[in-house]
Length: 429
Image 1 (cartoon, rainbow, N blue to C red):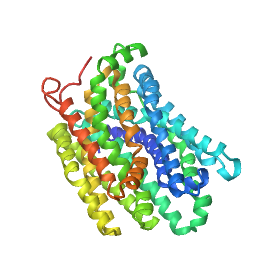
Image 2 (cartoon, rainbow, N blue to C red):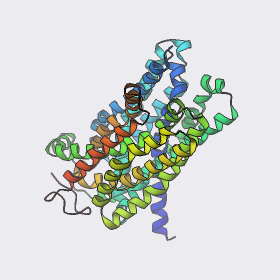
Image 3 (tube, one colour):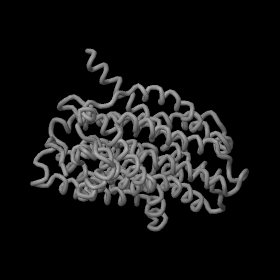
C-alpha cells in the first residue's frame, strides 16, 4: 500500500472511530430497552413500560433537527474537524449520564428525567455527527471513489452494532438474567465511557479537508439559513429519501432484539445472534454498494432497491411469523439487511451531492435528522402497529411505506432538469 492510500485509510479510521462511539452508545439504549424499562420506567403493564422506554429513545431523535440547525451551520462556518470534536463531547456527556443515573427505585421520578436528558444530549449531538462524518469523507475522497469512501460512515455503525450485540450476548451467557436486569445492562455503557478519551485523542489529530480550506468565502449563519430556505425542496426530498434508510436500519438493528424476544418469543441470545449477523451483513454490503454506485450511478441503485423493498418486505415478515424459528428470523433479517445496505450505500453519498456545497453539512444533517425523527421512532411505531392490528408482520408495512417515500424522493431529486446523472455537480442555490 502506497503512502497516500495509507494516509487516506488512517484518516477514514480517525473520522469513523468517533462515529462508531456515537452509534454504539445510541444502539445500547435500544438493545437493552426491556432492562432500561424495568430500571427507569417500572409499571405493572409491560406494554406501557416498554413504550415509555421507546418514546424516551425516540425523544433523542426529536432533538436531532435542533442539533442539525445549531451545529450544522457551525461546522459549515468553522470547519469539519472542530465540529466533529464538539459533537463527540456532547455525545459523551449524554452517555455518562445514562450509565451512572440510579434507578427509579432509588431516586424516584428524577431517574427517568435524567435518562431523558441524556437521550436529548445524545440526539442533539447525533443530529450533525452523521452529516459531519459523511461530508468529511466525501471531501477527502479520491476522484471517482466518493461513494466507496462515504459508505464507511455507515459501515462504522455496523461495527458498533456487532460490538454492542457481542457484549450483550456475552453478558447473556455469563450472567444470571436477574443480575443483567438489575445492573449488568450498565456494563456496555461503562465500556462506552471508557472509550471516550481514546476517541478524543485520535479525532483531535484530524486535519481540515482541503476542499473546505480552499474556499474563499465561508458563509455566515444567516447566509446558511437563507440558502437552506431557498433550497427547501431539496432538503424535503432528501428527508424523504433518507426515511427509507432510517426506518429499515432501526428495524433490522436496534429493534431486532426486542422484536425477537418480546414479539417472536425467541430467546434473547438468539435475537442478539441475529443482530450480530445483520451487522456483519451490513458491513459487507455497504462498501460494495457504495463502490458500485461510483460505477453505475446512484439513481439506478436507489430506484431498484426501493422497488425491491416495496415488493418483498411485508411478504418476508409474513413468512417469518407464519412459522417462527431462529432460522427464519435470520434469513428474513439478512434479506432486509441486503436491501438496506445496498440502498444506503448509494443514498448517503447521493445526499452529499444534491445539497448545495456551501451548506453541505447543515443541509445534509437537517434532511437526515428530520427523517431520523420518524425512523428512530420505528421501535415505538412497530410496537403500536403490532398491538393495534394484531399482525406480528406489521413492521413490514411501515418499512414498505418508507420505501415508497424513498422511491418518490429519488425520482424528484433526479428528475430531468435538476440532475442529468448521479455524478453531476451538486445543485447550487
